Image 1 (spheres, one colour):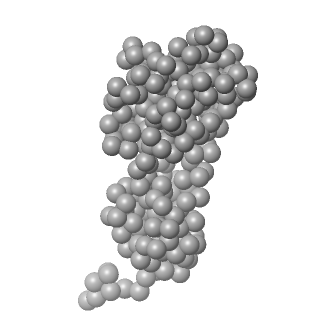
Image 2 (cartoon, helix red, strand yellow; image 1 turned 135 degrees about the vertical axis):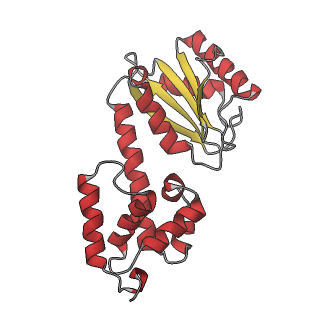
Image 3 (tube, helix red, strand yellow; image 1 turned 90 degrees about the horizontal axis):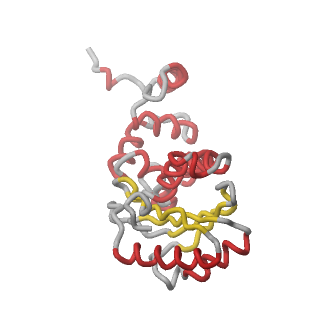
Length: 230
């Protein structure tokens, strides 16, 4: 008697079973590899995508690693290609847009978890530093999400005077500094604290409040305000 693995691949039946579980089973209905498998089926509909899905997880570590992988690296992965890479990258784009919507539609300080979720999706996976400043109005609603640089947090990249000038230019009353630590640990360095204090002091002189400096890492996040460092 033939083993199950020797049977012809029942693509239509397998897709139907995945679809039924997806639509009726809640957030945990599909394993991580099955999430990738279902997405890849939309790009390559007549082939068993399970081995490819598992190989992507093995290479990039987890779902977040796959979705946030370099597009060229995804496209060149054995069995992929640009169409399949695009099918995965659109998920990362949609997740960022959805998270950003949660930040834009409510006062930032009143929807802190939504902000952390957005920043984590955008920055936690990066292998380089990203620095951004969130400028807020008098009601703490987001005026501008300014990507300052993809590089180190230092005064060459983010000068206190320029940060405050931008706040005045866009009519912001407050701001939140954000950057990530590619090392994984979000614990602030001495330089992180020093530049935050310089920007906060410059803001005080011109009536711009620095609410916080949030550091994002793969191991979580740290608020300098919560640590009493602002």
